[in-house]
Length: 214
Image 1: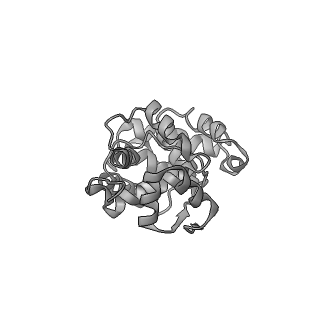
Image 2: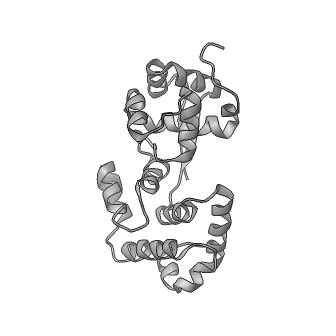
């Protein structure tokens, strides 16, 4: 995995702090932003497909069974050597099974070329991935943020992000349009802001009401 670090005094973090007082309080509480990105594109997407609409615990349990079924390496070639029935023994639905198979087939056939993604725009990548039935905007955006390290992705389809969003702004309106409008000020570092939102949730900050001046 590749590592990245954004200290509090780095231009992107300073920019976010200057644009959003509420987010700034979270950033200053959590400190420097350091993270790693995934380097195995297919394995990452397979894991996200498995985890869709499931709890993290349930998703990880099923994915660990898939890893074991694939002899510890989830690759397109290995997956295509398995029957749908064998893959389903992990506990996932047939819909997800066929989504995985379609993804593996497109990667093997060169329809999806991960090596070409870095030179493509976010929209082009999303359009490429969402051609596969079962892969939507959520999965595609997770890929952009956590694999390609794209810095300006707003994951308003993600439940964990929205949980922190509702807490930060003390709002019950988390429609896509409302989130996009309010978070427009984060551009061009929406992904970095989102990472702080995830960290706020993971650290337990969101368990207590947010107070800007307290």
